[in-house]
Length: 280
Image 1 (cartoon, rainbow, N blue to C red):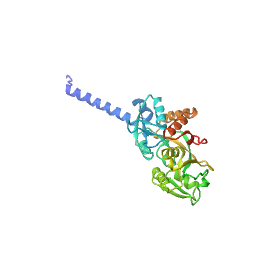
Image 2: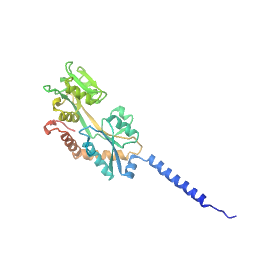
Image 3: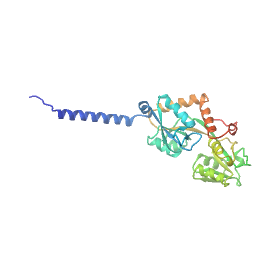
Image 4: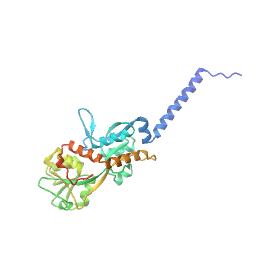
């Protein structure tokens, strides 16, 4: 008896095999790690934060991104000879974007215990000192100078700025505003004497609006917290290892400090606006 395979049967079998191959590739891609996906696609997806100078600047007319974090992102992408894909986000949403695999890396995140429940972190990109924007005529030099009931302290709700204010100036009259912009508006409107902020954010804010007052680093104690890259947690640690190696090399050579200072100056600050004792 002669076996007879029709063209229709053969065609159907080939189509099924092709479908299985496509499904197999899709499953493999769905399960690939960040390290593998960047190597395959030559694309690094970055959470980009509009309005967050000096880390991120977006040219409204051209759509071009720049800033210290963009410089770092380009350097990391160059390891794979990859290009950047910018995903507009916020500090809070960038954690969710990592979890949902929308981005591969998020910059300028403090590694809080709450965030660490959801994502992983790189080594510190910088250790960021805290201080205040102080109204004109007020020149605090330490936390004790603002730890008084007559000093009106602004900060943004739920932030490390608020944590620092309540820990080191609990006797001050503290008002936590919905976000950082609202806290700065309180300063502009004369409703606060100081606004607790990380150094680079404060210097940038004063550069944009000198009428706010001056930035003052506070001591006794010096409060400085790490700023890291947020990364998705996965069993394959190769991507984190590359990012950590990149940070170590560029911190050691002073490149990251140079990018940060360049970005602070780009925001409109003058070299003399950067305190000599400010270190990263």
